[in-house]
Each structure stands twice: as structure tokens, then as C-alpha cells.
Length: 309
Image 1 (spheres, rainbow, N blue to C red):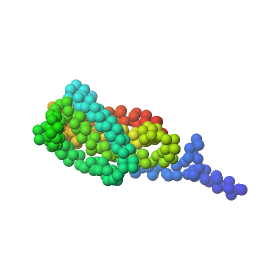
Image 2: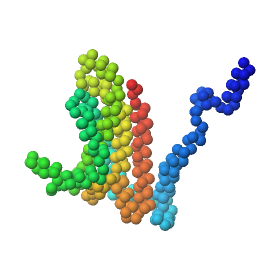
Image 3: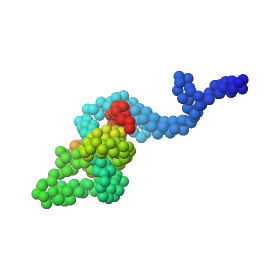
Image 4: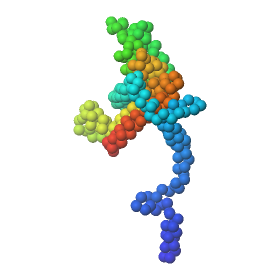
């Protein structure tokens, strides 16, 4: 008995990892310094560049020197119509691409999890554009969307339809690039939805079949609510990608015609090219804050709505 008491006292003294911590929480079996390598990597790759960017956004800087000017870069940013329109285009572009990826990805996933022929091959075909270089996709569609000699307008002409200037008309340029983005990225959304649908227990579908439920009732009452985690994942990934989009827009329109398809990332790049490093750094900070302001509360809201199987 005395031996047991001694062992228990020693365990309490050295803080036995298997016992509960003060307050009833389970004590971690790993020392806290195990987190140190990850913390160093996180600080070097994220915290230090972020803090440095915030500082340099308050300066007029070049490679060799910098001059602190306060919030003048931010004032200039919001006073420039082209920069403000780029901010608006970024939001529009993200909403269009994420919305279409959710709708098309879910529809394709339902089709590709049904009993159809060549299902595995069709899944590969849908996912293939994700693997193709974004610049390559942009250059290819620039040729296809040419208003005079592009294959798309020539095909429409055979049907008696006069195709517009997809990338040269200010009314179509941003939407055209967004549709190409959807074509390239919908395969990933479909893959996420397929994973979500096949993880739904088969008992739900068996019970629905016994009750005589139709395909639409299966989709509305089983697939749609129980694939909600996949929907949340697609929304968040698509929004983040849309808000940060640059390479496809630059490859297809370079922000033109005029500034009608400029987004924040392309505006930032143009400011760097022109030598306005402080202003472009302020644009980076604004983009960071925009993504954070949209994604963080949306993520919290969507996670609170998840359905447990």
C-alpha cells in the first residue's frame, strides 16, 4: 500500500502525461518543445513576411532604401479608380467561379457516382484540366476565343450566330476568363464531391429505396445535406483561389481591354512593374485583409453548420 502511494506521488510530481491536467483536460503526451520546429517554420515562412509586408506598405521603398510615409499608399490606392475597380472585379470573379464550381461540380459528381458506362474514364476526363498548366490553358483559350479566327466563333457562325469579342469586348472579358477558370478547376470540385458522396453510408439509400423514393428525393434529402462538408470545402477553396487569381487573367487579357478585367493581383503586378513598390505592397496587404475578412467568418459559419453522419 505504501509502495502504491509512493508511486502515485512520484507520478504526480513529475506530471505523468497519462493523467488529467488541472481543470479536467487530458494532458498532452508530448513535451511542448516538440512544437518548436513547426513554430519556427511557420514564423519564417508566414509571420515574418506578413509583418514585413505590413511595414513596407507604410513606406515608399526601393531595393536600396525606404521612407516611412504612413497610410499614404492606402489613401492613394482607394483614390485610384482603376485600383478600386480591380478590387470589385476580384470579388465578382471569385463569386462567379466559386458559384459555378459548386453547381457544376455537384452535378458532375452525382452523374459520375451513378451507374453509367465508362465511369472511371469519365472521371479522368473531368479531372484532366486540373493537371494542365494554367498558362497553357490561358494561351490555348486565347486562340480559341479569338473574335475573327477563333474556333468558338467560327462554330457559332455555322449556326448563324455572330460571336462576340470574348476577350476584346469590355462586357465579356472578365466573365470569359472566369468561365475558363471554371472549366479548368471544376474537376477538383467534382473530385471533392465524389469523395463526399461515396462516404455516405449505403443504409440511407437502401431505406430510401424501400420507401419508394425517387432519384430527385434521394438527391434532395440524402445527397445534398450529407455532402454538405464537401460543399463547404469547395466553396472555401474556390473563393480563396478566385480572390487570389492572377496567372490565368494575365495570360489571357493582361487585365484588358483597358482595366475591365483587372483584379487586385494583376494591379499589384503592374504597380511593381512601374516601380511603385510601396503602393503595390499596400495592395498585397489589402488583398490579404480581403481574403481574411471573407474566408475566416465564412469558414466559422460553415463549420457550425456541418452535419454529422
